Length: 288
Image 1 (cartoon, rainbow, N blue to C red):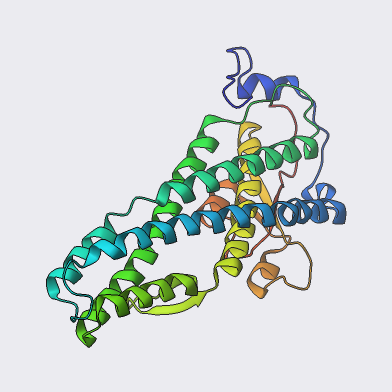
Image 2 (cartoon, rainbow, N blue to C red):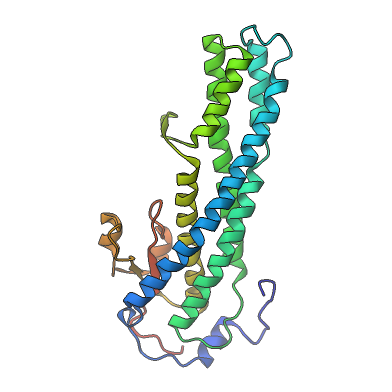
């Protein structure tokens, strides 16, 4: 269970000293079957995760809809006033729905971290001792989920506030603005570039599938890395899924060995939809 703690006797050093690992190279762990299973776990869990993200988006939509009737108290036939716009902007920015995303992201990522952790145990043939996911791994996921949930909501708040200012500039009525805001929400998710301009808009279902796949891949590698670090693995090897969709950037890393420190400075996933895996790569894994 996640809340269990190892006893004082089961430290990383003592566990490693008790374990007899054969001399194995990274290529011994790297098989087509491993890569296939790594990808299958991600793909099997993606649709369910995506549906939960869509449900979180609907909570955002519902919260915004509740604001619209109260955004204007004067006649709906009169143009939007600066006071109306300022009030609606504040209401939008005060929306507190990021927790809906964070909760889903954390829950799904924890399950996949467990899968990555168990897979790493099997790779290294560890049958005992390493039975508790380290606290640091769970804390990393919790922080990532909270940060990502906030980022999602802030992007959509920005798109909505931009629409409010556009309505003020163009003399829209509250009814017109209400319709435009609902259209913005219906478009999907907005991605901004460094200049503060919407770079692209992704339909909710496509965005949800992309995020689910990416975060599940991230979680699975985080689980593997947590086990490798517990087992004092010093080097890891990048492994793509070897499919048609492998990008040139990931293909260039396939089979490349990194120190743990180097890997953690630029970890997988490299980009949205990246499903690369990480394998242990110590040239000579023996008891300390």
